[in-house]
Length: 249
Image 1 (tube, helix red, strand yellow):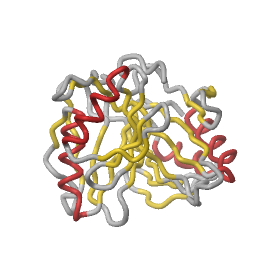
Image 2 (cartoon, helix red, strand yellow):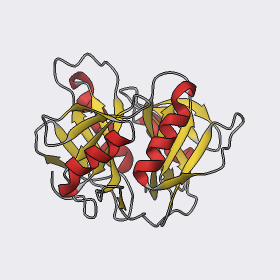
Image 3 (cartoon, helix red, strand yellow):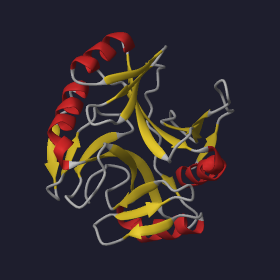
Image 4 (cartoon, helix red, strand yellow):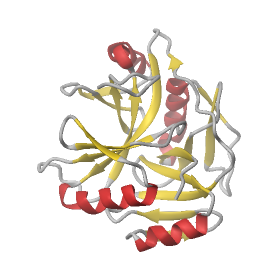
């Protein structure tokens, strides 16, 4: 499979959908599109430059993140995903799947997106870019999940400090790479989830202040990265990686 574009969906329950959408528009410098879908549940976050790669969805349950992989042959790649251990939840023009570890993702048709938006600068001068989806994987599911994603995407793998992190290197020009994180033994999650990572370079503390002013709060600042929770309850991380190159931290 050749993945030609990647999109992250922020799935938000109805009571916090407006609040969460406003937050993610503010921190990414985007504008929501007109709602679409049978229940007006979908919107694209439109960047000031480049092609969109972030979307929001009003959905029941807890706030979560899922990923769309844009491909040429949706049906054919869906069959390959099933052979690798995925389960089909919905077949339409797109295919909704769960990975072997239970992570929801979609295969969608190529709509011609190719231009990655530039980093954005916040109200206090912090420069950021949403550039990574981190898969949070219970230890017992790690081998199967990592094998699934590396085989499905055909992206090369490399380890990165600390040892529980593995990077899937995206093709040049794609807006989002995938990071696989092995959860610790004390983590009680039994399914694979995901969160967004924002590269902030040396501006992490500035960006923390910007996000707190918009209603987010700090969950954990003891790592090289800072764990945050947005006003809708969604966890995400601010990392010291360079927002232009993705290198570092």
